Length: 148
Image (cartoon, rainbow, N blue to C red; front, side, top):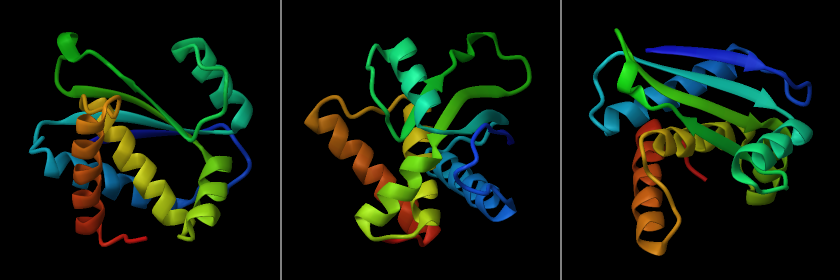
C-alpha cells in the first residue's frame, strides 16, 4: 500500500504519530473490506478556507466541512488500484474532538476510516446506506481499539 501525505495547513503539527495512525486506519479498513491488492491513496491536510473552496468547486456546497473524499475510477490501473484522494480539515479535527469529547487521534482515525469507505463506494445519502456505513466504521474502529 502506498499512502502519499500532503500537509497544506499549520493548525496541527502532523508528525509520524499521526501519519502512522492514518496508515493503520487505512490498512484496517481495507482489510475489513477484503482488499488485498496493492493500493494507493493520497491524504491531504488543509484548513477551513481550502476545504470550503474544494467543497464549493466539486460538490456545489459553499461551506466548511471536516473531510472530503475524491474516488478515482480505477479503470486504467496498471500495477495498483488507485483509491483516490482524502482531504482532512485539521481545524475541524480539533473542534470535533473537543465537541465529541474524544482525542484528536480518534478524530483523525475516524475521518480516515469514513473517507476510505467513501472511496470504496459507501455513502450515507439515505438511512439504510448510513446504517451500513456506520456499522462498518464501528467494526474498523473496534479492531483498531479506538473508542469514543
